[in-house]
Image (cartoon, rainbow, N blue to C red; front, side, top):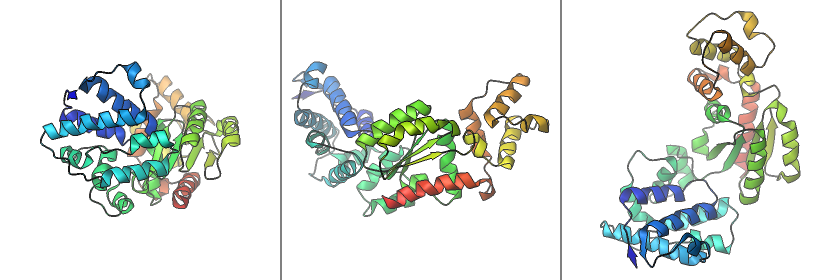
Length: 327
């Protein structure tokens, strides 16, 4: 075998991609194939060759390239596969796997050496990888350090507003998403939530919590025939996520966004949804177009206390907490 050694940065990127919350077959094949296409000089394989190669061969070649690259950088392989076994156990507990997928996951990548390359400024999945090499109780380590993995519950939401704010309201309830293993996925709209649920329901063993705006009932009905007993759908009782914020919290965020420009009460109490109210206020004052994701950051910044937690927000967090506790 002749290789072009992976740089330290490339090794870290590969470890990052292999430990993300993604379907293991997809991520392992992608990472291993990229390594073989770009760093294996001889024997040489095309993309078509790899598409037709068995998973065991792809895994063996890729791990050899990774481990040889580490050895050439001075990192010895000591036949320590504790981390590999922990990753294997995790992937098979969270994802539906078969014998082919197991061939990819059950590998001998020198993760112990890779830990030496990791800095303090790394994403949460790599913090988890590092903890797998030292922590006796990984879930307790997750509670202590808040690195999110292992994932216990998937939350599917429509957009960035929920992605930004739900974890913050969780903290007001004493439930930290990162410490409890809750992964929040913003699907990008109601139809995409349905599509995402169908995909994840087929590939995941862990519970899924699905959150829709009030007008998402028809979309929820699409999910019902597929809904697993362990999963939960919550449809907002009124409007969109912005509509379940407390009045004081919403006003505080609006004042901050508008730099305390006075807004007549009739504009805020017009009976429209809060998103429509914001759009009208911005339009009348010649401001930039409302960007919900940006306003969500303003709302997050203006969270002050548990008084900002409305009953429905508390209900949603309680339902997610219940799923996490039952898995």
